Length: 278
Image 1 (tube, one colour):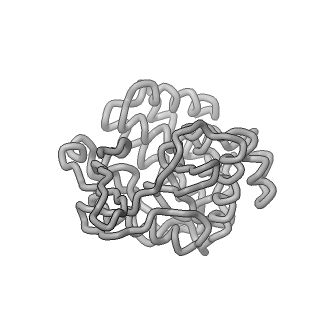
Image 2: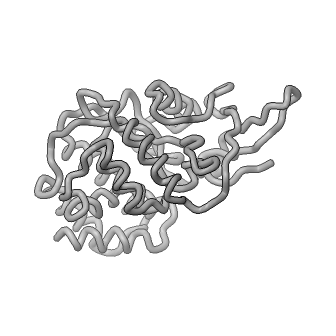
């Protein structure tokens, strides 16, 4: 049975002779050809996904599928049964409990052991102690260049993004406590069963200021105040996050979506850049 979602691999649900249900993912070369390869970064493979799932599993904070077999272009996971229902109060609270626990796992610096992909595009993760520099160089300008090269940004938007990135320290603290984040928490990557968190899938993991994950969640997952109230029971949220930084942190996923899909995402990027005076 074909499964939906993903722009790097095709996924199929199968049942094997012992009765187990598995998900078989295999690379789709024609889909990768439409997206750029950046500098000397290696091409994304399904080994990256297996590596990130293993890192998340090690935390014991969030449930993830077990990896049955992995090759560069083939990944076999156990199938996670889930409900197709809107995010309820109970499920938002369950998600907040898990994400707060995940964010408790830190590192000395921002970055990751290796580049990690979003879809078919590998992102750099060079270790740095300066969060502003990491966000500017390895996220905003990285995806800004890609979106500009793809012709997906409105006229003048990239120059305005450059000006904004030169002044990020006005809003973003340079130093903080890096947290392990899932990195791509939209509703299709969050699986619930009976209003409990069944699994997180398709990670884009690295160590970041956890606010960037909190900013991403409302964009494409459907979480609301219930999630933030419950998360705050475990970990503090700076009030300036909501008043000053949330929209700024949403630039990275919007730039990536502009590069991948075009449409109105470039306009949304331009609106945020203008909001911050870029």
